[in-house]
Image (cartoon, rainbow, N blue to C red; front, side):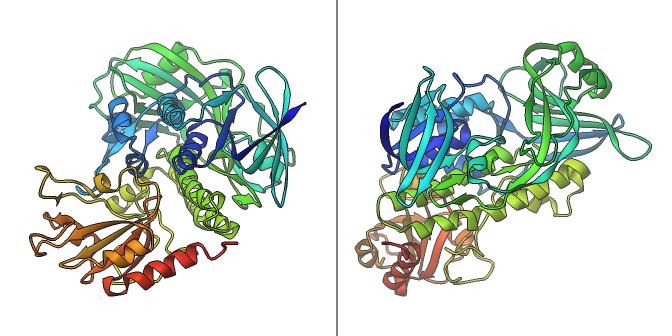
Length: 536
């Protein structure tokens, strides 16, 4: 066995979630090792939907432009039942939301994130498998099998399991993972077709049997390239890869790509012939598979120095492309907190807020995607705008969480725990173009204090707190006041400041605190005290 190495955080699994956790830690100066048991990225377009909220987080990291150059827009979905179009769902969002819905093959998401973390000094250690681990009060000892077949022991301060539905980390912690499996099996294929579906629109076409059950289904999501779609559909009996559901008590999960026979282009074409809006010929199948769907969530997102994120923590139907995005946001939530602890700026109790904030989100996503998979998204009880905001993950919030400070100002204004809205129309005298708030926040990895004022800023008190400070000036502020002027009035409209108001924006883009500017020094101090209450 090789000698022990030491790192701040060991991350198992280099999919989008593990890469996001690594990115969040490395950009805050935390030493990481990122391992993945596979010898190379899988060339499969598995998780393809990128939500507007994820794009905002990537913008904050300086990554959004790279993604926009590689992705395609998702503008909506046509819904057909029994050969008739019953709905056209447009993925519309309020104009102040900076990004729409996008589609990007998972391997491209991984490539972009992998290049980003490589630029921060961390390369993925491929062909390296986590065999097991133990933890004590001072750290985690992990056993790895490297690409050469050698066994290595690694000593890390913390371990994050981003190792998917069959997570070694989750099993090693003994976390509960309750739920169930769908009886149906599905085929997945990445193909090109010559139909004339509107650009940027997906398709959900189904056939309902006399008993009301869905006995035929085709779901198509556009991908970059001419006429290219990720298609999923029910498996015909002759292609079934079953084993049936794993035996209870085995700890195995029926979720993800299955072995067995690979669907052929003709198998996919047969479903398209039955369910497409018109004649369509398929070609250029890049890959295909059979897959199963389960819905499960862990009973806790971590224990001690070990955590789980993404599919290791929650699995559910792919309806609405919620899984990868929820996992990426798990990683962003955990990374900034873990960085503060590793840097000695907060005590370990801060890490308990990861479960407190993210597990309710996971529970809601699992419940909603199961409901949408069985009843159809078009039958959701929410009004269409709320449904779109929820699917875009713009309504994810932590008002009831342990870090949300006291509300202040109008009750319908963004309050602590809510997403901090982006807005446009901020101007400075030298630039001849308006800026967005995201432009101002970009590449600031830690908390940012935003001060809204019509006159003096109170910045001295804020600077004393050591927090990066941004001043937003009301339209009537004196012409020589330093700061970003809210020329379009969008900041005032979206943030609803109650006179001069201060806002703490967390590293994950949520509001941490909101308070009158007359109280800025005490309010910032109170927020940091609450955040760092567990400092040793």
